[in-house]
Length: 484
Image (cartoon, rainbow, N blue to C red; front, side):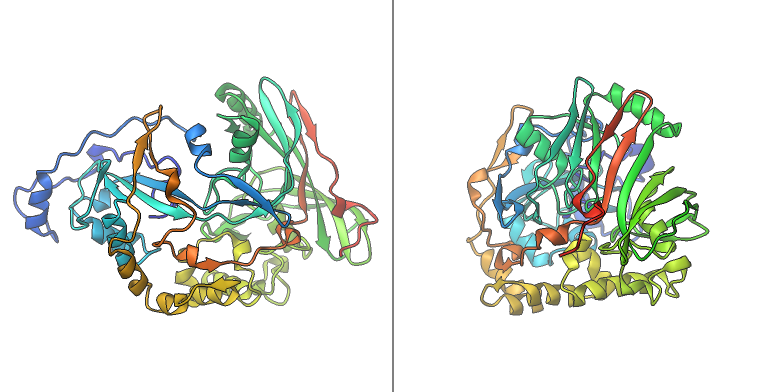
């Protein structure tokens, strides 16, 4: 069960009962088998627990694992983590095995059977061994997985301001702001909590993972709402700097092309008349004969707005892994000329990164890429691996059935749970860094170069009605900078 599918970091809220057509077992429901459902009726389902709104992280979350530093990178030791969700309306009356087989395809069914035998699957906090159990409304599902996070730059987070109301930092490139996708501990929120004891922070705005610069957090919901009101009233001034290909015009350039999201999972947008209205103003600072340094003033906050508008103008960011690629065609999307359908564009983009062995830069789970390029994703992972355990290629080719089947024969650690002071259920930390059910443990992925984790886009200044925070101009934006 993956995080995006399982309803997010804290588990999804229970679905409203009145919106569901529940089958009481009196008579046969269309398309359902009466026997198992009738048995499911006898099973008690506790009422859903009230959950605090928003994302909140405490010491039990920060203690899940630890960091180490190597080769200019911040790394996270593999750890066990619980994905959790309440039963969705469309799952009611279906077996747990059916749900895993149709909605959570990251692993073969053999994996979930073995995980159940190891006590890693829990229904309403009770280990569930029989995946044939029929799901009911408000069932709470918890799936313990062995989690591996990608490395990020080892560059320290610099503080620009900390007072009773806000925390403002200079975010390094490669760090996501908050847990998402494969990232959890290697995020700004977790590093601030683990290393600086700054907890319960409220995100005021976000930066793309590869974008560096000014990042603001509020220390209370009241402060967050006050600044958010300034954002809605367009009182927040934002200033970015970037380095782009070619000679950018000397005169001020305004781009108001609407932007449409092509894929939320892959994280790709493009200019399209059906997109959302947006506006960015650009001013050139310098030109070195090959590339230009440009200041950017986004008046709206659309996803990838600056990057997409620069691509449209024919001056994409020098090392943008999405919008400065050949997948967009000979002109790389200049003027909105792509001549591809959205599906063709996504396929071309993924295949280009496959050929460059740089798929990890897209920050997309491999199971989300399977519908685009099929099993070539797994083949590419094995081809680029530094070290592959014996038999791993055959296991991947056969759906890992042989390995998982062997692991399920009393060789998988049982999940030992304990309650925290807040009442949360956590996994035993003594399991270690290797897990016999985890395919990722059998592969050693090559480390990215710290240079590959930097994109030349930086949030330079944020100014509101009562504040102004600025960061230093990055080295790559200096007039005398030369790319090595």
